[in-house]
Length: 170
Image (cartoon, rainbow, N blue to C red; front, side, top):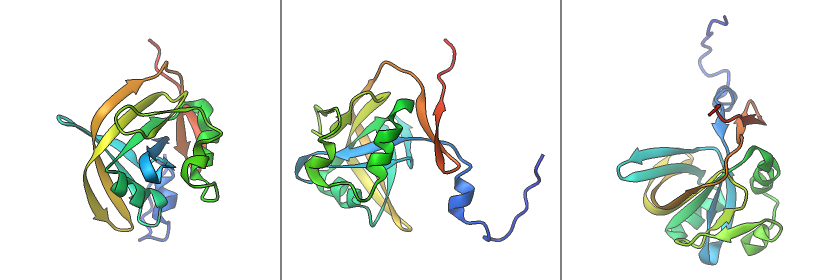
């Protein structure tokens, strides 16, 4: 077993956090500032009332887009959607509606935000609150609608690469 060696910050936070496996989502907003972004800083927050949160860098286009739209949608990606995750993580992709032109998606019934076809699950959220934290904004969303897809393995991000989370045996 490896013993922890504390080194007072010589190893960076990004390097250490790469050892924490996360699911992969695409956050989207609809309306005039339609936009999408790959995010793994996403989690459930509360069952009552049902809320989730996502963290978005101040410098990201999505930061202003969520604030302007007053809400966001989340598509939890299937393991086969690594290409989608990489696409929405690419800062050089086109912005606006054209970024969704090559994808299958449907507008959310409550927000109009794009919901990525083939995802494991989808949520639409109204923006409940936001908090500044370092170089990110924490956005809290109250659930307006949610749906679960047909299942399958989930897309994971771990140690700088993508992997798959296999569903438990039923």
